[in-house]
Length: 497
Image 1 (cartoon, helix red, strand yellow):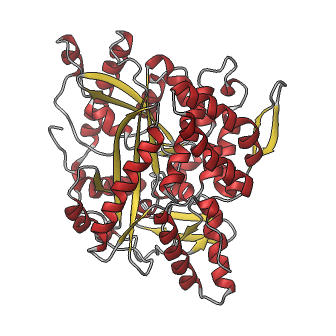
Image 2 (cartoon, rainbow, N blue to C red; image 1 turned 180 degrees about the vertical axis):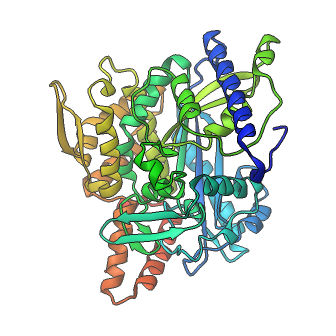
Image 3 (cartoon, one colour; image 1 turned 90 degrees about the vertical axis):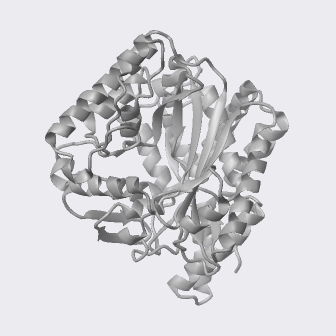
């Protein structure tokens, strides 16, 4: 990127100029779409996992800079908090033994990172929210040493104009305030990317939105925030509240939140980028001197830097992504729904379920989104975040009109797993990989166990043994870390009495 504006002097004229530049980028994207300049199908998928650093005692360790120096790999990067890392897996073509290959790469990379972290008295842990994190850890002093994070925090805090309220009601109740976006760092996720053509983008995005609830139901792994037992996937309400730029009066006026499920099904990718421009003021005031139209006129492909940067500060659970690879533009759907962990096998099983299911649903003759009101999809998402594996969802009746309420596990086992298997077959995934990883999802449903339910059961068992709250959370976290690295899927873990 080129010219920069210091956060404190991002005034009204800068915002107007930035909005005009975003409009130029959007016009450039529209022209690329109209001229058919986008990459053709390559069946490419990508994966990112956000990680925690925890010590042998189960408590967070603020040492990501030192650990990254030891890892010395571009595959690993900082994240918001000093107790966070992120690992990025190179794009893979869906097909063959890609799922086993992906699992082996993750095991190798994470084992190496864990060995390096151990040199700093820490370990690498995949979990939606580290149960031992307390408010004392989520302070501005523990931001990673990256200017972008500080700038983002300053802009969101300035936009809100007051402290952030965190208020989540579950089996227990959390109510507190924070002066920064640092609680966002507690929320560690898996991001699944799928490259799609412009013609298929809407179908894939709509399908991804429709299945967010079942993804969470089978994959929830974040039941604790600041030591309180809240939702099965507390990462979702915590992230929403920790990034909310709206003071109460703007909430009352119906202003959209920056962490957003959306409000309608779409007909094409441009609609999402247009919504981003229409509803959300820019947060990161960084200008690029590129002129998109001139680049296109010259036969080139613009990077659309401002559009991409702005897009990254609108936290959709399924985000549209524009990118350029080898001189050719492409579009991706970035699925941001799932928490990290519990194991590599579980992460790959979640990915297999998602990629297979979306492939089938996106091309159905009567797509699910024509039969499921968008508001019901959003309600399902919240229901799954609250109740996880025990959620009850509203879903179109097979062969009949209307919706029926059904247990998430019944819906997955009887209807969605067969569709996911069809999708993996359509991708050309080897049947052995298909059966292995979808079998993990089947067993979670059959036993009604996921990461969240295991954490809660293990914590409660510790309390029944007489442990205090903090000690029970730390003991559960240590046991979780041990089992996670052994890589036996979570439905087989069991709970110590």
